[in-house]
Amino acid sequence: MGKKIKPILPSGFNDYLPPKASWRFELLKTIKNQFENFGFLPLETPAIEQEKTLTGGDKNFKKEIFRIKKSNQETKEELALRFDLTVPLARVMTLYPNDLPLPFKRYSIGNVWRGEKAQGGRFREFLQCDVDIVGSESVISDAEIIALMYQVTLALGFQNFLIKINSREILNALPFYLDFPSQNLDEVLRIVDKLDKIGERRVKSELEKLSYLNREKIKKLITLFNLKAKDNVELINLVQAKLSNEYSQVGFKKLKLLIGYLDAFGVPSDKWVFDLATVRGLSYYTGFVFEVVLLDLVEVGSIFSGGRYDGLSEKLGGNFLPAVGASLGFDRAFYALEKLGIIETTKIAQEPKVMVIYPEEKNVLEAIKIVQLLRNNEISANIYLGKEKTLRGQLAYCLKNNYQVAIIVGEEEIQKKKVAVKIFKSYQQINVKIEDLPLVLKKELKS
Image (cartoon, rainbow, N blue to C red; front, side, top):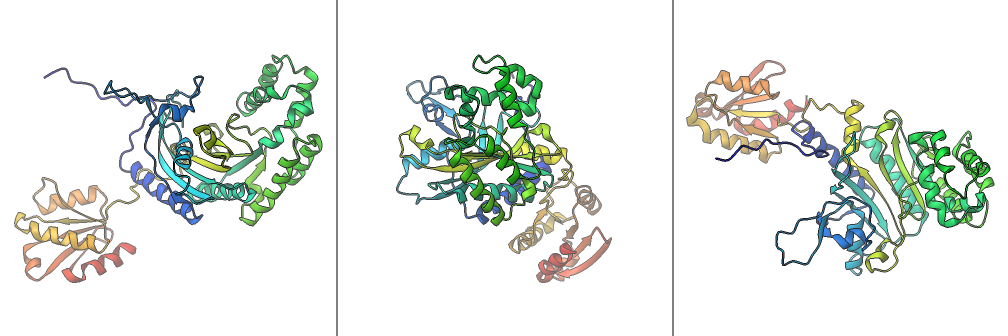
């Protein structure tokens, strides 16, 4: 035999053992139910895409992606693991233009991979839960995505959170407000986006390095981004008074429509805020941008974010399609739930509650029939598979693994078409007819 290899988990990847894995599955059910409650349909795409699809053919593509090493040198395909679920959606919309009636509301849940440096709450393989509405320019679509973000965040158990909302169509007025070249807007916004991360002093220092911004303009910019008001409506009016020009009119009109729609969708006004400093996907988003931040765990960053990205499918040779969507970073959200103590990872969310044991080997077939009877009646049950041969040993196993009930299949009981039911919580043991067992257990497990 060769030298044994020491098993090491790569940095930025995770193993989830049974109680965490069970909780993750339960939370994913919650998310899926919310998506479907809003009328979104599931879409599945492969983990691997052509590299040129992911990069859009851009030779200066900056995202660190995992490329697939060719196992067959004859193939000419350059392949890579997907880094998000939005580019595959754009590919699907381009390939199947007649199969998906517009507007199309889809959700996708799947792993994505990015070759970035791993850190707290940020991983190199992570699960994303995406929702998108393709083919609608209506502000109602933007409001519906935000309303869904609110409902999902609540359903996961978070209480102290805020949805930050901004508009690229409003930010486009900045060059004319401060009198600098519009082609430099993204450069300015990348620096302003760091306000929460590095603070105002360091942001000012970085802005001062830009030749087209003097100290007066920088002061004017910081003052604008620091405007405060008693509520969102007043703040929007203050910002509009500053940025009122032809470039921002459409953005402010849509923003005021959005306020009414969010109220109608039941999103409380204290759960969202207009935040001019929220900047996302500068080369990607074209309208509203939004993100969910946890006020008790700011260092985690946003757990749910998105915006309007009209025209993405054009990069893949498709027709122009308006689109708006959001992505929940499930692993980051799960990390936050653990840090905040919202989930109990010491308990298994869907652990089997019933164990069928048979101290005598000759009763194994009857034990199998009984466990299958329970499963046919939608009662989660296991049959003992260990080495213990004694009743005491098998019961000890049940106690150690937190089973609520043990069904003891003994020779004497089988002859009477009965089994002994050991209820650990009450220390009771009762004899039950096999035909009555499912009903008795359902009542017992509910109590």
